Length: 114
DNA sequence: TAGGTGACATCAC
DNA sequence: CGTGATGCCACCT
Image (tube, rainbow, N blue to C red):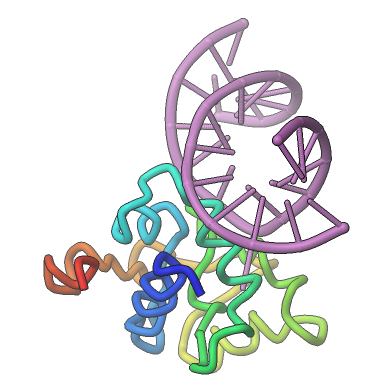
């Protein structure tokens, strides 16, 4: 597994329940400001990681469940989020800004340097 | 080796 | 303010 994956998974795993984050922010935090697509790609391959990756807490910049179709079932992603207290309507997270979790602010500066 | 793809983001019109 | 086009990085065929 590439080191960048380790960083992505590591950061995603730090997202607390009831919080969400977007691809761009994570991409910047791990050192690939333009690699937002890599984060999504990593989520798609999150199953390759032995640890559990709460990929449902990672959405696009507007808080839309762009990747719900990649989860098993019809609306598992939405169910998981709602189960954590997040209101989701029509694949759109309500009050996204309030639930937003910023790794730059919540994690130590050197977290990505490990 | 080269070309195409993707759970995005951003700029231009 | 909405839609379209381009850039990005790593991976796969």
